[in-house]
Each structure stands twice: as C-alpha cells, then as structure tokens.
Image 1 (cartoon, rainbow, N blue to C red):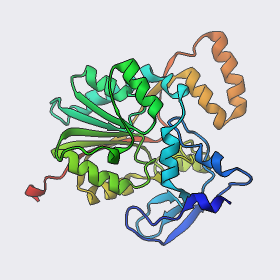
Image 2: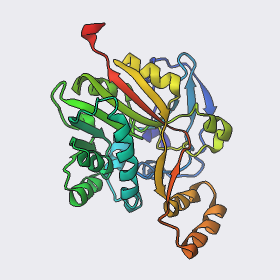
Image 3: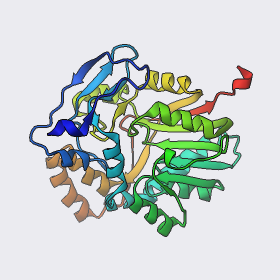
Length: 310
C-alpha cells in the first residue's frame, strides 16, 4: 500500500546509485496520508524514513522518499498558526543576519528574492533595510498571511512556478529551505540563472557534520522526515561549486525564538521536559523571553562565479 507513494532517487550531487544505509526506515503502522501530512512549515516529526549516504561523494539523503508532487501539494495546503506565532522573533534574527550579509554586498541594496519565505519575516526585515523584496512560498495560507500582516505580495509555489528574467536579482536567500527541496541542484541552477554576475546566494541549513550532530547522533533534533537532504560543509561546498558558486563565508547561525515556543516544540523530543517546563514558564511569565540558540544551523554566503573571469 505504501509503495505507491514512494520514489527511489539517485544522489543529487554526483548521480550515483551506490549508497550505504545509515538508519533504516521505521514506518510501523503509520498510514500513507500521515506520512504525506508531515510536510508543512513547522513540520518537526522525528525521522522515520530510511537515511542513506552516497558511497561516492558522501551526500546524505532520504531514499526512498515520498513522491515530490505529493510533498509540494501538502506544503501548499493547510494553516500554520504555530509557525507565524514567532514572526517578530524571526524578524529580529533576519534583521541582524541581513546586516551581516550586507558587508559582502558592500552595503548596496538591490533586489532580493527569498525562496520558501513562509510568512515573509525575512522579506519584512529586508524591506525595512531598504531592499526591493520578492518571495515565493508553496503554502497559500502563508502567502495570504504575509500580504495581510506585512503588506508584501509573495508568489505562491516554488521557484519554478514563476519565470524571472536572467540576471535579475542581487541576492537570493534560502533560509532552512535547501534541505527540503526535492532537487537541490536543479534549484541552484535556476538561482544561478536569475542572479546577477557576482550576485550573492545565502543558504542556511542544519549541518549534519557539526560537532553537536555528531554528539547527539540519532537524537539530533534536525533528523526530521521533512528534511530530504543532509549537508555538511564538504558536501554543501561541493554542490555550490558544481552549480557555479564560490563560498566566501561559512559560519554557525544563531536563531532567536520565544522560550514558550521552544518548550512547545520540545514535546517532539522529550514529553517529560515539555510537561514540566510549560507550566513553569506560564507561572513565572517568561514565555515571551527571547532565546538565541544554535543546534547545528550553518550560514553560507556564496558569490555567483563570473564565468568571464575564469
């Protein structure tokens, strides 16, 4: 019954079909529709899919996986109030991050395109800093939320649902998105096409090669069913170079969310800590306390390679 919703894939980095299994699948009695319904902006269900590692290049990915047309459809539907409850905290994170990124744009403000922009918090921060903002998001409800709350119109769908002119953008961003897409190299090819010469690409991703991931092993919190690919610094560099980008900065990325929200999300990993922590936070009244955290998130700033100078 479940096989009808799965597809087998080759390595997205080198094209090899030779891999070793890191973690076997643990589907049990879960229904096919429940597997599909995991795909949403705040999806945090622990990994139960088979995780493999390419023997040729080392890329780690889910294989087999849910068919991508079903994944995109699932992302496009439903509401996500939990995710947008943290909009103002995400704005603060993005405002600081963009201020740092602008060091590499020589503080020049141009056109920015945020792929998988969710509720548009990054675009709101970028607009405040003087950028001309553009974005796309598969979830229709989040598109409407962005328009209503930020006054920013974003395109429904993924990067391929809208044709942009070549060399149109100065900056393209993927905040916790590249690990979710079905074909990262195809996305990067299109990003290269729409970026201006020497334009910047920013990718934020959970690094499976980080010391915390290695320490936590199976218990690492970013081992999720919604993450189709797992990069480390070597494989992300290899993929970006292959698609015409040169990394100019790579570093840990700290995010800020409210303590109440973080404790709410903790339920997935420790129900006991969640049950104890939530009442304490409410009694003390510190649910809105801003908490910066790092659990392996990594920020990459890359520049489009100028082929004329090669």
